[in-house]
Length: 435
Ligand code: DGY
Picture 1 (cartoon, rainbow, N blue to C red):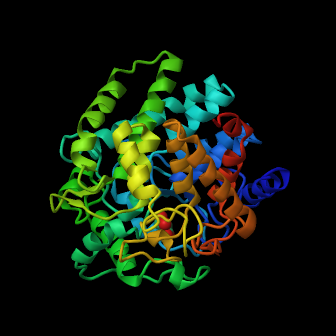
Picture 2: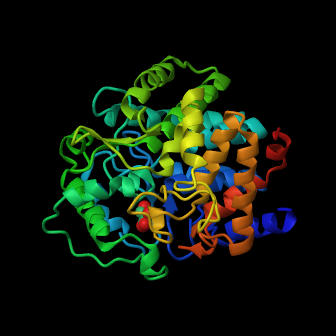
């Protein structure tokens, strides 16, 4: 059903956003190179142009900081009307900043997982050898510079680091921040996308205020941990990191590199993950606010990420699926909501059907969920969600996100990771794995 023409169209979206050495996530809305977008874009490119996929990764790594941080945006000296521009970050005040202009924060570490998958499909030992040291440096930076409480679970300092900017998970924390003297700025994000589909002004002001705090601290990691008003252990980020550490370990083993350091990270995260995130009363994983010292009790699709990481027990899996994923008041496609899966449980009072991370379907979240369900052999449910996801893309095009009620597209058009994941989700080998 989802055959040549969807794949051809996906390829043409990736080609049309290609600048030659990096791929824009969206043609107008996102004109630079974003970290986790880029990882998925490389995965998509690897289906039809492996050398170009490798170049995508090299370009991303050219923005790596000297202390190992891989930033959330690499600007590559290209000018645009995107806000904030490279100069806004003032990264030159950090001794670790690279020559390539970048942002001063990071994003969920998907890259090792993507590279392992590419390598398992089409072995590329020379490329793995080339990029392995940079991957190891980034993971080491995460496990040290962001090991805020010694638990081995990493902290994030900005909602943009979670990749889920205005998720209801962050709303109370942001509301508690009272920004003073916010630098003057003019939003660019509502130029190409209706304001109703973008974060509210109150959240956006705090995004900018946080950057101002960080640049005044010259991005010194210890200062950021000590003073960032936003410091959170995010279930999604930590689950992705755990999975990426496993994948990094596999890459290390394939190169004959030592794995003891990575094993140490994995065992510490595994030891502390449940105690920190699992809520046995509600059968959900919750993020943890390190500043307030308490869990953030908001029900979003981030709760399913431990499936992607293989961190949930069978009992936890059953509770997540039966009490939440299949629950028509939360995530199940039923009634007014026709598509899998809204990024926030519909029962949450802050749910909004078209606003960015407040409710719409995001293809990346569906991909995490499908992969997670397959990992636990819930293949029938994974297949229902896979078909629905591809159907959404087929009907509404390669959009950034979708209204779960009617499947209409929201946000950027011709969105690169939607195209990349359409290729990944259409891959025949997934169908062969079905039960
Ligand atoms: C944006 O500009 O909305 C991005 O999500 C920030 O990374």
